[in-house]
Image (tube, rainbow, N blue to C red; front, side, top):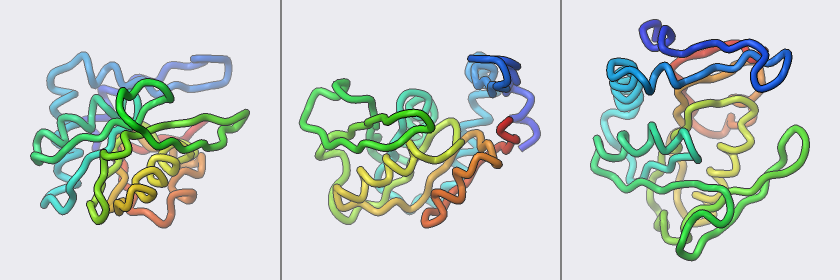
Length: 174
């Protein structure tokens, strides 16, 4: 996906020294870049064989919502605790240094529904795995996880090996 790559900036030493940050704002501040991203995501999901798109906070919302719109499905936000107004379920997961928690509305996925999880970045896979556990606890089936960017040497794809994982652009994760 060479054309999309030109909209992703590489920012050295952000947010701290030694990190090469892959910045998607170049995709967002260009109509062409955003259109390329959404079109590429939807092309990887056609023909539609899913009922719900789950987008992980916050950049997964940016890409997941237009995908849900394009296919006429519902959109289920996966958020940090305390951000969703109705009854939720929560999933804790481990980070490199500590733990985190995400939540989803308890009625966002019905038993038997097929779900696509969308996010901007696959690194170690912890957040996506936690989102999949939420979907599965609600009785849904994760049929695909799709990411704008994959940092291929950080182990995310291996961690998510039981799922169908796709990414549009792949970079090393140094």
